[in-house]
Image 1: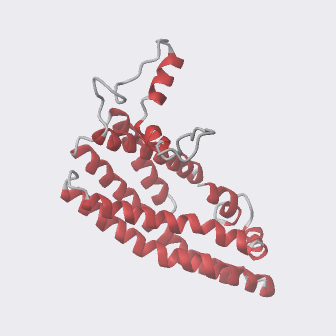
Image 2: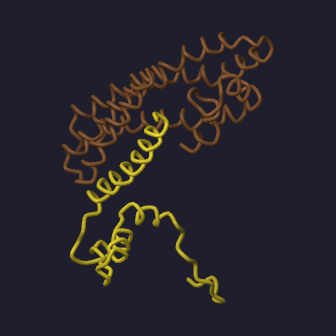
Image 3: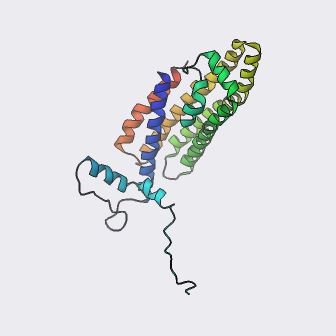
Length: 81
Length: 165
């Protein structure tokens, strides 16, 4: 029983950490009227749409995504000054 | 959590194995046992880093952040020495058990580290977690969901720790 309670507790703790990270990142990246911080809304107003909107507006996922290297375009033209 | 389930659970008090099987498991899987503890040592380190970060962050109120720091330092000071002893010494104690068959010696060793790690330190961590909530709630970096999760989880974790007494 105690083991199950501790297991549930640690899972909620992980969720708590994610949500508090969202709040902290939202301080430095608040919603804006224009630009890339405009809240994105999925056209579907159902559960799936709401879920996708939450994912799309997640500051933590945006922050982690910035670590992914941008795609380098391959070109035959080299040494262009 | 994964390390607890995959590496430590069979050997922890209250597991699905009997005491004799648990101790034999530790003696036969020493590296699994040692590896399983590493994330818990790192978790203590990350808790300390978080506590210092809260104190250093200008928009977090000082009183709750200092409270978190004190509770975390207390938890780490109680937990880590005992956890390290548990990690390193349990394998030797388990080997001694296999040689002598004296389970009482292992039980004595285990109970000497179990209480500080699983009860005392866990309670300090749960109290520190209440301080985390205060830090973020008082600085308006908060949401209703966090209120609900905090109200459910911190008492749950404190009770889980105290229930082991």
